[in-house]
Image (tube, rainbow, N blue to C red; front, side, top):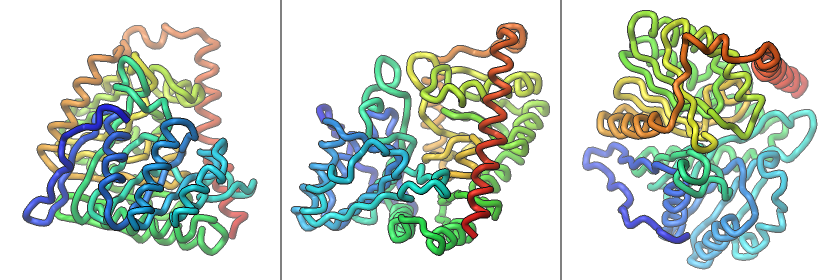
Length: 388
C-alpha cells in the first residue's frame, strides 16, 4: 500500500508495561499491519472476521507468503461465515510456502450463530494490533472523505504475548466441535489476564461469567465522564441502567453512534433506545460522513479498544476481545479522537426526536429491536443447549 507511515512502532517502556499507539483510521491500521508483517522475523498470527479476496486481500496474502519464505511461522484464522465468499484455494500459495490456515467454526446449521468476531495481528510475540477493522477495501480511507470510519490500537510488550496465547487457544480449537467448544467456553470464563496498566477481556456464548461486561459495569459504577463510540449499539438493560444513573447524577455521558450502517436492522434497533437515553440526559450523536465501524470506550482515564460493540451479539453471542488500558496519555489521545469524530456528527435533539419519526419508522424500530435483542440471543442459547 502506498503511503506507509514512517512513524515508529512504540517502544516497550522501561518498567515492563505495554506501550501503545492509536491507529486513527482504517487506512492507518491496514498500513501498520502490513508493516509489522513485513518486519516479522519469528512468528505471525492473524485472526480476522472478514477477509475479502481482491487487490488488498492479495497484498496481505502475498506479504504473508514472503514472511514464510523468510522462515517466519505464519498462522491465519478466518471466520467461516464472516468470510463466506472467500475460497480456501485463495490460501494455497500460503500453505505451499509453509504457512498454516484454518477456518473458525466451519459452517454447520446447529452452531452457525457462534462467530469469531475478533481482529488480532501478533508479530514475534511482541507487537500486536487490535481493533474493529477487517481486511476489506471499505476500510481504506480516512473515514470522512472515503472509507468506513474505524480505528485500531498498536501494542508492544507483555500484552502482545497474551494476545498470542489467546490466538493459539482459538487456532487449536477452530473447528468448534463439541469438546473444543466446551473448552473455549471454559477458557473464556476463567481467563483474566492483567498487567500493570492493562487487562485482556474475552467474551463468548453462554451465561457464565463475562469478564467484559463485569469489568465495564465496574468502571461505570464510579465514572466521572463517559464517552463511547459504538458502530452497533444495543447494550444490555444493566449497562443502560448505569448510563441513565450516571447522566441523572450529572455525569457527562456522550455516545457517538451510526448515522449510516451496513446493517439497517442494527441502526433501527439502536434508535428504539434513544428516547429513554435522551430523557435521562445522555447526549447522542450520529456519525454522518461515512459508515461508522469504530469501537471505543473512554471512562475517565480508562480506554477499551478491540472488536466488541455494545450490542447483544458482541456481549452475549460472538467471540470477542477488548483490551482495557488505564493510561492517562492514551485516554487523552482517545478523547482527541472522540472530539474530532464529534465534529462529523449530527446531535439528536431531545426536544424533537420523538416527533421526528413516522409511526411506520417507530414500528420498524420496535421490530428490529425485538429481532436483535430477543430473537437472536434466544436462538443462540437454544443452539448452545443442543450442543450439550
